[in-house]
Image (cartoon, rainbow, N blue to C red; front, side):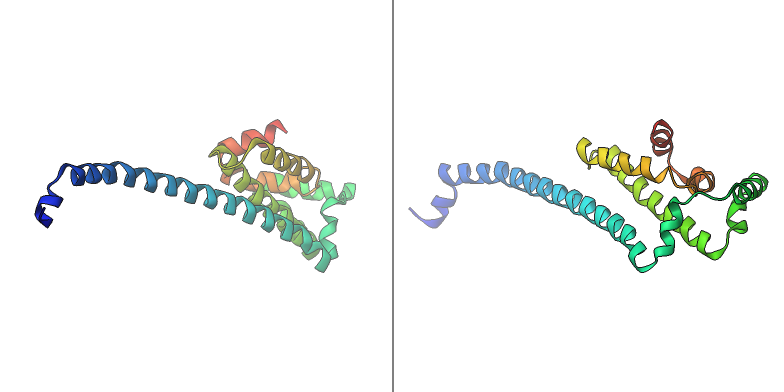
Amino acid sequence: MTFTEIINSDAMEFLKFLLLIITPLVLTLNFRRTVSATRLQFLHDLTERHMEHMLKTIDNPNLNAVWNPFTATKLKSLRTAQSKKPFGAWHKMNDKERACYRFVRAALEHIEQASDAHDNKWMPREAWKKWEERIKAWKTSPYWEFIETDAWPFLNTKFKTKIEKL
């Protein structure tokens, strides 16, 4: 049998057919593994960024003030300023309060990214439950009401609905 006869044989045709079937399957499985690994890496990075964010309080203990309530006079002043213009409270805050505001605002950004990942089915329900608990905790910060007002127009609708329900 010559080389040409081998190429034209039924066995070779069958091998070509198998390659045409197997190659897309292998590529599809490989693509799925890659997407899954990418999603897992994203979730890991997001959680790591949030934890690093929280650890900033070690280097800057003033950030722990995000949990301290404002005095009644300060709160009234901030609410009045906020009601007059966007970011009005920000302009009434001192530098330490602005640092706390930014700290809480950055946490909100992490939470919104986690929400997007959950909506796109990148995050299992159990993992999202942990983020819901983080939302509940962050919402207790006295800065939250001002950040929520300032950031609200820029947040996606699904995320706003989730926030409101918690």
